[in-house]
Image (cartoon, rainbow, N blue to C red; front, side):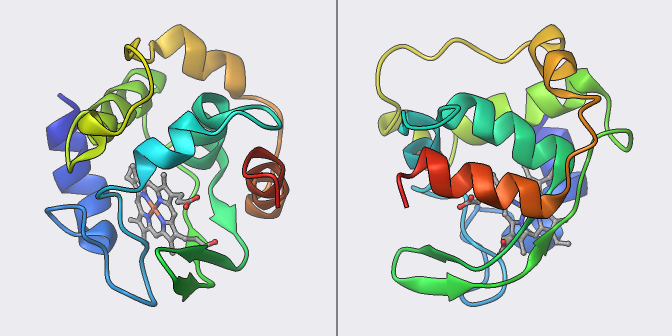
Length: 135
Ligand code: HEM
């Protein structure tokens, strides 16, 4: 299920194999698991739910390449189940599956629902990212 959401809603920017476009769209490949594993702030697992729900705006660096774009918010456009499915897909594909720390418990629609309804912006999520990565 998550593979279909990914190909329809994410691959246009992050590309079919999750490789991204350097300087424009950051990779999912070999990267999203690192975010997931981060433990500062609200923690990587919660952070990823926030990125999907509310988007992300701010200057970041991934694998030594800088990005300063705008990740769209998907809350409302995708169902909670679809957001859970696509995160479960990305975290178990593109090399991320080998990089996850510990056993992966899939996201549920209930978990995504608990993140929704906070009226956050992509800039707020950027602050969360810095806290999660200890930057
Ligand atoms: C960032 C996933 C769709 C453009 C991110 C990040 C994730 C992600 C996890 C955070 C990376 C990090 O913190 O290092 C997804 C998923 C999508 C999706 C699962 C489909 C539901 C899109 C689309 C676009 C896009 C369609 C382009 C219109 C971006 C950009 C960033 C980003 C530009 C970096 C934002 C910044 O520089 O602050 N995406 N994305 N994403 N995404 Fe997506």
